[in-house]
Image (tube, rainbow, N blue to C red):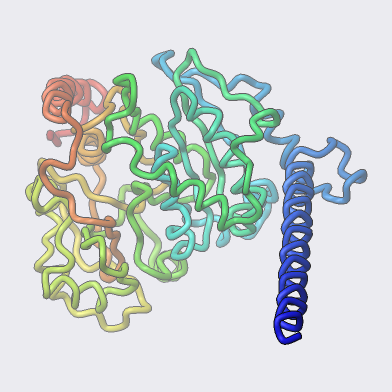
Length: 431
């Protein structure tokens, strides 16, 4: 009798466990189907029919049609014929809505940057600091052309701040063409929101070691800088690499400064450049940066690789100069360019373009700084604004051909300087 009761109880428990297991299977099946439907819904949102009224997302269909049109043009070739450029592959709402007669103060300063797809994840933190117009030129090669096209479309679709402020431009080899990513479903699997797109980009981070792109393809940094610059109609432009961060509130502080003090047409505004240990939080203000600088957590940009390239900034003077009000930007001191200074600066959109013959490592930025000098520009160092590179630049982190490329570009730089004598015959300045 006692044994019979035990068996009955065991059967009840077993039946209950089986029912629970069955319910879990049903629930998991439901979740799987729901997730599948959700993915199909997301995919139909991304690539649904062209008629906006059919699916209730006219603005997203408009974005899709703009992308389709940009790609249908086939882009344009650069001056060398080696690269294909898709300018304004994705336009921001800011650029799209700019009209003649718009408030000029809203179009004073834009940030321009360049990258490959493996560093595009830095855009997320850059936008957390910079809440203003941003022009991004992306270089992609091989399969990355499709991936880059798909991911920038996804970013513009899922990320409201990117929709509002970021213009994307794509550069690839002239023999390659970008295509509408409608059939590349694998690139969109699992993408549900802005965070998921950046998570996907994280999986492609640091794919190459600096300039070491597969197939020994040259990274056209100066072409990319010019494309990004040309993608904005702002009066002033700050060109930086995508893994650099400007100081907080730079846009509004610069706007306030030029309203108090009209800049000269031959003046650029230098932002002292630093680099910070990877583990450290990016400083937002000069007092925060100086505190980190004094304990060695922040140091001058390129200090280990080429201290001479930034030394003319005069870091000691800048760090020790008293700032009356960190919210008020002003010129701390003005410098004449000296070799081999390659400052980061805010300049009017009329400054000379970067020479696109320079690719890969070496002399790509100094050549443009040199031309500014010969053309008669002066370099005014800002009192409390700065840029910081994420991570210390150290020997050994570069690709194998760095020294070879530097040697090649050194020869090119000599020729470039000779050309400036012809371009600016009345200038008595030399590099």
